[in-house]
Image 1: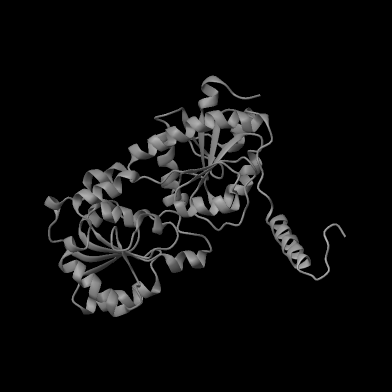
Image 2: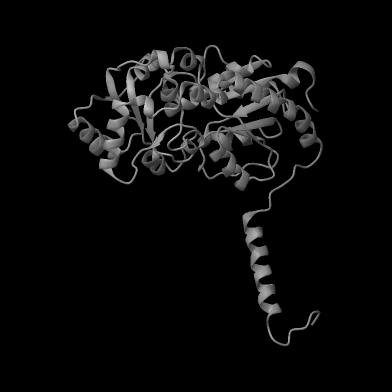
Amino acid sequence: MIPSGADAQRIRVLVPGTGTRFRCGGLSVALQTARLLSDLRPTQVVTYRERSGSEPFLADVLRAEPAPGQGLWIVSWGFDVPALLRRLRGRAVLYQAHSTGYGFDLPPGVPVAAVSRNTLGYWGDRAPRNPLFLLPNALEPQWFERGARASLQQRARPIDVLVQRRKSSAYVLHQLVPALRAQGLKVEVQDGWVDDLVALFNNASVYLYDSADHWRCAGVSEGFGLPPLEASACGCVVFSSVNHALADILTPGVMGHQLGCGSLQHDVARISAAVARPADWRPTPSEMERLLSPYSEDALVNGWRRVLNELDALMPRLQAEPPLRSVPLAALRRRRWLAAARRVVNRLPGWLPGR
């Protein structure tokens, strides 16, 4: 039975919990997604590890609604996705994919909404017959409204170079930061919770972000890379690694500059020059607005509207007929081996077709 009417339009966004133990970028994005989707269709946040006083709990909802249930479920928490998909079998589910590298495969027909081209390409390779969409994360309105990036707002800033300790590499913390301080630059290494990140970024001339080592150690990818985008919205000159999804938003020499560019002294010289003349190292105000516009909440709402309209047509078909399946990797390799073997046989002397 396919839900109809308001039930078919319902969306449920799954998060493990909304308390402080789950506070991170992934939770912020999931809650933002739910907030934006609520402008389009009835939307609920549903928790599945920690009960909340205000959000429904997954086990309770599943008991009350036998499959196929109502509406569309959105899962995103990478380590939990395989177990959630098993619990939601027979229901309409979409995977909002952030990081890559968790190692699981998706069941046929499960749509993927990738937040970056890096993630889109990963699933385009791993699940080429699943429905794939690109829906970048969005900056919250405060970054557009309060970010001091316009030319009239530029001024001498009290922090020459801002570094956030979390995810920063040993190279940045133990080599680059001391070298910059030795040049007389005011370098702030921020650690812990900050109540007003916009104000912090507005007070910095240059922002350093180097997450490559962090994510290589974690074994998964940089899912989107909001901090460099947030810093850009505040008029900071950004020096960053370009691993994974950071390559989506950071064209070296345009939106930002590569950090760890072959030489410590080269980094020090470039960063010092950017502190001295930041306007020479940033896009023009009009170019910056153009580069940031795809990451506004209005752009994301329009993207979700387009995707949901397509899913309205697709989901009933996925329930009415077997979804397309990707050829397993082992089978693809076997086909290549057989094709190579045939080519060898064809070159053997005295071989005749049909014998």
